[in-house]
Length: 180
Image (cartoon, rainbow, N blue to C red; front, side, top):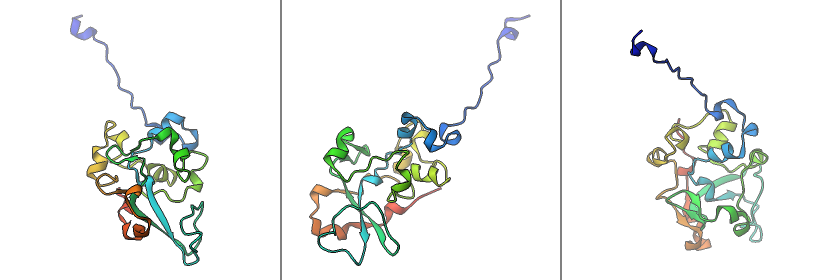
């Protein structure tokens, strides 16, 4: 037998991605965190259009939206957001520094109503799958996401640079766009 015939044949086994085989509830913390695409749309300020809002309640956070109310996204982002990387500059302290910041978990996903339609957590929860531009499908790179226009990069102002009276001038619809 020649040396050529002695080579072993290596079979490649296709491994299915964890997000296709596990429910969100069954994912490890590392798997859960890796689902975040880094678009940073969750860091945008959102406003609820409500005819019953008073001066006292206008800027108060809410945990729900009621029938007849409409949520509007703005291009105003949290001052802690690094708009180039799409990451929080104080991730571990964010909920202390910004009390309204929500830490999305498997336990509270159903209650977090303001995630944009393109959010991977929301997409998977709704059975819509991973978007083609997600970094996990692009060798860990965010370039496909930015090229598809799915991140906040180049589209935002920071909340500490905007006068609260001009917030309504910053309402936008681009965070609601989703592809594939």
